[in-house]
Length: 442
Picture 1 (cartoon, rainbow, N blue to C red):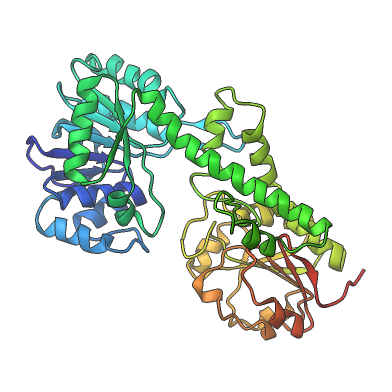
Picture 2 (cartoon, helix red, strand yellow; picture 1 turned 135 degrees about the vertical axis):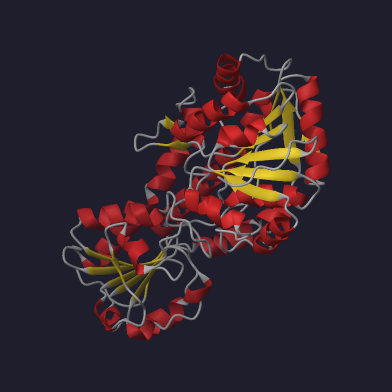
């Protein structure tokens, strides 16, 4: 267990030291607070206590963690209850996910809440930042804390909700620039949380009338994006039917200031957009655009594979290379990546599936039951199909001439140089662009 700082009026425990939790802890620790990070991962705790960030690709985070370590304002422990007992502000940023049946999975946060309740002191402030279904802060977690601690929310301890609203690779910037939505179980809870965030993040605040409003607002953000991406994907498929280039359509349409058509793609991944709409769906929003958008976006992977099959026939025993295990460019994050859907569908087609991602080691790729393939490996010349999923910077100048046996390149992000690919005698397929160049083998 890491060293616990002495309790003071400015002592904070951050429960969950993932990408967002560690960044929050480091920012707080550099803005006048003594912070203890609590995490069940011993390796994470060890690295923080050595002044090292276990998170890569977050500009400025390494420096903040090291600086806080040197100033003795940031430490970490695996024992959440002890950390909470020595703090008077507790920030909870433990993930809530969905399982394979898209049912809400509370296992990690339920455990964390129990540990928090066991160490909770009277007059402490608890703020949940984890994205939650509306009602959970009050009815699920507030009541559980009351039950275990014997304290009453709003009287003996204060309860607030303020959802994280940041984007990977720019979290520190977003914490300062994005308004912080915040609400409390009562006025004093709201006032305490607002005061804390004003001092610790120095950002604009949006105070809303209830915990449920704040919870709803975060899920609604993700639903909005999912719905609009689904619209772009639907338009892209229709554009192909009409032999229209969707990229040109988007450029032309979005020149009108009230049009904001998103870019289509091979699917939607990450911790937010493919997950949080189910927080509404599981609570009763079972019809309409929200569930329909989930269906549209998750079906882009099989749709993309069908486009390849139409050009070269059966994929049985064909060598297919996926570029990018990550859900999006320049981020090492495979959660709900469209690559995982592609892999599943390609295996159903009995294809030989290879994956290249410069952000992952070979052993990390193998964990997904696929073959890792370096672009320097001679086997690249034996690939029949290349699919771009995540347009990492390393792929901007990729040499497609090395794919000597490739029949079709599926550009899942409409980012590749199609003219170069066509000149090499390959078929080019985009999303909403259709077949250009090459020939149909069927």
